[in-house]
Length: 343
Image 1 (cartoon, rainbow, N blue to C red):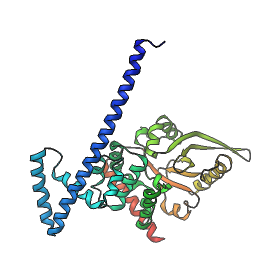
Image 2: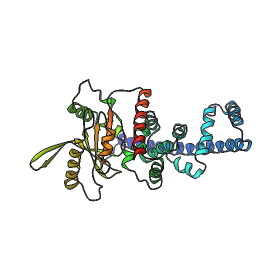
Image 3: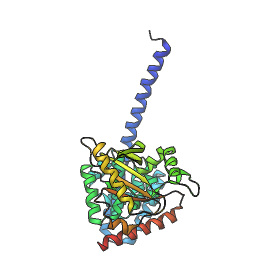
Image 4: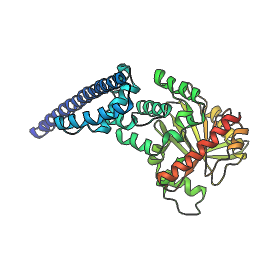
């Protein structure tokens, strides 16, 4: 028989659920209303500026309007916020796109994405945020860590990158180039100088949750030191994961130092074994990820790793200030673009 104490517990739980659900619904309604308001404000300002066809007039009207609205309504109408409202309307002239996004995005999501000037980069963050359901905090972290510059899509010509993002937007089709990145930032491992491969692997297992967060959404850990017996010889794959969206096993090999051409043959053997003995019905072929301290771009290109279903990525185990990371990524980007142009 349920006593009064238990009844009170159930009653509290039911009322708590009602309050939480209502607050969430109200917050979503308020967010949708505010986003719609900001889009309309941006449209009004943009239309007025376009009529006058003067850039200096645009800056003047935004500054004056900001002052007037702040005096009337308080916070939320600063010059930078008004500029973002104008960008919201400029980037998404069809409000139906905004209406679709604001079911998942808060206004704060938009304020983080709108300052991004590069169209492909902006669309990348929009679509990845949508498909992986990033919180505001996650989105800010991804932008600060320059995830776009580390993604595989950066190595593609603009036309192909746009096409890939269109497929993601229209059909929710995610590709390996949107999933894998280089370099991976593994500064959370706190490795000491002169560490060995076993130390790197052990540190990853100890910080598995953080490692999966750096890999990205959709990864599930399967096994460490996966044993494969081939011709009575034992082989051991460092880490085995499964990616839900890609619907395939992901074999990861950890390497110290620079990439070596011999790594390809080793990974191909592992992938063939996984395909024959571990792949299940409905899955795509396994994909390999070789993590090296330093890549060899020309060797990787000549080996045609993509056709072998193998990705090669670098990793960073120490914290780099944003300026240094930016410089390193710019170097990667320049080398990748040169390889694309030379093809």
